[in-house]
Length: 99
Image (cartoon, rainbow, N blue to C red; front, side, top):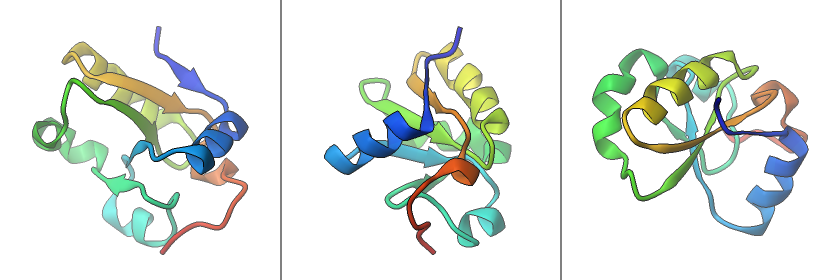
């Protein structure tokens, strides 16, 4: 089972402390608007990008709705990474998206 967090809990947590947030959407989607401080590592290249991650850190994965980030969570979890899927994705983000 994948660890997940509801959007409002994630939103409040992200306002309280700096989180390792990974947006797994494609670059053009990320550029249209993303959660502030999120790093773009598209799901399509995650096998390569995972080398930039540390198994010691916890990562919050987000996409548009939560489906791709869940797939990314499964992949990374199976590789030994600590991951949390953000439910609802950027579509549910209540704040302003960064560009």
